[in-house]
Length: 498
Image (tube, rainbow, N blue to C red):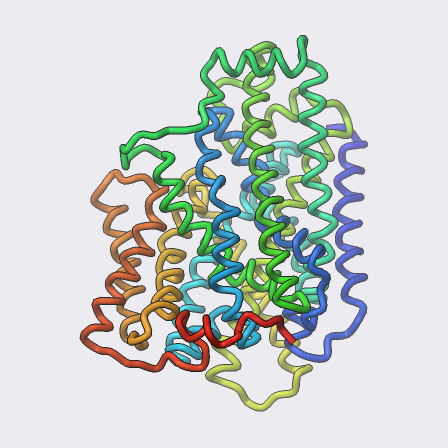
């Protein structure tokens, strides 16, 4: 890389850090302000933050590599996202708005008791701690590949830069840095794509023709083979559960839209961000297809047998001119830092709200609790460094994240569905369902060749069904105060947040 590329990277890192610190100038007076921006974040900014959180560097780096090495069939698993967002906005959001949650798992606490709230929060933290590694791995791989520094050093640089503004500024810093980072990692891949098209003889038509000749434009697989990595049916069923879980019971995204002033704003945030995320996912997959065509027409830009996670980086470093290489690394860092900051902030939130304050409150002042929240954010940052050192043993950064997360996402979504739809269910049903749901996924992973794309659907269905059966033997009818769907429909709970 040239000095200009390093200048571009340095300007980005310094600029986004300054934005985060500037957003932190106003002192937080309460834990709610630190974690939710006092519920005054504009919905458009919250939407940009949700998109930035949903599009991590593993998407920016991993998706082009997947479509480059295979085809567009991976697009299937993302097409259901707007439907999942609609389910989240229609079914789950009214409950959260009604009880003004800070942590999503406060709903389970109201429905089943404090023990279930802490249990759900804890398994969410375990899931997120595992996925944190994939979030850090992707941009760190890019920096290591481009600059020659070690992967571990790249991980440390990314983590230190992100923790600086995240721990100090809380939600306000996270949101406004996400806005900046959204524009960076959306514009740079689009610019790189335009450059690729403009430098190919025959332009876009020639690239598409080459892709079609090599069967790279196949987008749907209607096979009923459960061992196939991704099929239309797995996407329609199981990946719908996956996306619904992320939109509805995942604190990282919930914390974004619950920071807006009203339920109407939250709904707008959920729906707009889903369209934005889907659009960027489509862009990244198309980038991989066109990179394949370009490399076929002009061999050598991507060495043979390049791992999928390194395809995009290899192409950029080989083909792109000075300045664009640095912009690409900045985009990878933007995608990584935006998701990482949101995840660390959310991890600090649930650890504080669902564990520390819930069980070990000592009557400390709000200022003390804010200091503790910053400490928890820093501690989770240290833990994520360890996770990043091991995560790549589980596959590519895309498939590793989904496979690891599906074990717990399905169980969490199932627990919320038990609470919403099974009025007779108590804490025993929720806990039994989640444990057996997770066990079922682990068993499937151990004894079968069923694809990872089915894991979340299996976990959700098994959690719900075993929870229902358990409720028949130990029924506890505690569903009141607008905590179940039938009650909610006639309760007027869909009014806007105060």
